[in-house]
Each structure stands twice: as C-alpha cells, then as structure tokens.
Image (cartoon, rainbow, N blue to C red; front, side, top):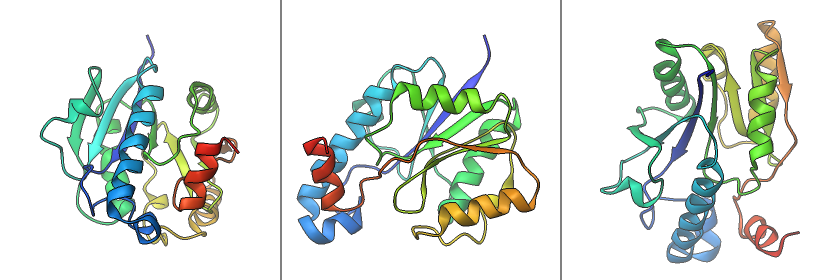
Length: 198
C-alpha cells in the first residue's frame, strides 16, 4: 500500500499556553476548554484516516493518548519560529522515505475526510498543495519532497502568509494546487460561527 503521512501540530493543553489571541476576549480558562474541544475534533476526524499519523507537540503531555489515541505517534517540535518547526518536521518525515505528506494544526474544525482525500490526490500531479484559510494563512500544507523556501522569511500569523507562500512557489517554478477555503478558529466570532453551524 502507498505510504502517506499526516503531521499534526499541537500544543500541550495547559491554561495560558494555547490560543492567546482568543484568550484576550474570553479568558484563559474558557480558551482552554475551547482548545480541548478542538483537539478532540481533530482526533475524531484524523483517526479515520488510513495513513501514518504523527502528532508534533510543543511539549509532549504526560499522557498524549488522552488526546490522540492508538494509531498516532508522538514527537517533539523543534525550536524556532513556526516555519522552522514545520521545516524540521517535514525534513524528519520525508528524509528516509519521500511520500505524500500533509501538515495541519488543531484549529480548523471544518476539516473533513474529503479534504484530506483531495489533498493527497492533488499530490499525485502537483508538488505542493495548500488549504487556504479565511484569515490569509493556510490550514493545510502538503508536499512529496522537502521544499524549504516556503518556510523562511514569512511573516507568520499575518494575512500575508498564503500569498507570500504562493509567490515563493511560483518563483521556484513548483507546481501547486489549492483546496477549498476554510476558517480557522482565532477569535470568539470564529468559534461562535462554528458552534452555531453558520
């Protein structure tokens, strides 16, 4: 069977450690509850995927299986900014066996099995696949071989992330595909929209 991988970036669910932007409006205690629910949603949808799944934590919890059960590997993120951390994770997973590899975070509850299926399918003909987020970033990135130029000198957590990433891809004559645009959970309005099913 063809090897496929999914990298999931997660933060240890500890009060004050997660979703700091959201915490400014609803407080750290409520934010932790939201993050725990996002972890659970991510686990439920990715658990159904028949691929190699690796959760990269900022700090590995004492019992990571509480959040992602059997079938998930657990590793530690490298140091550095988000780009450096993603580059290191891709490098580690692609070094020994280049294959269709995706990375996601834990803040997009709109992900579905078809999202992942489309992403892996696009990598049959394209070198890179991106899932655009409504805030100008991306909720998913995929590649078959390591392409490092999209990880450095990017203003992370800004509305320019996706456009600058695409610019880098085009400048280096890489082929790419875009998935449907979905919303990340960054604000209380984002969360309420998700909960209301808007």
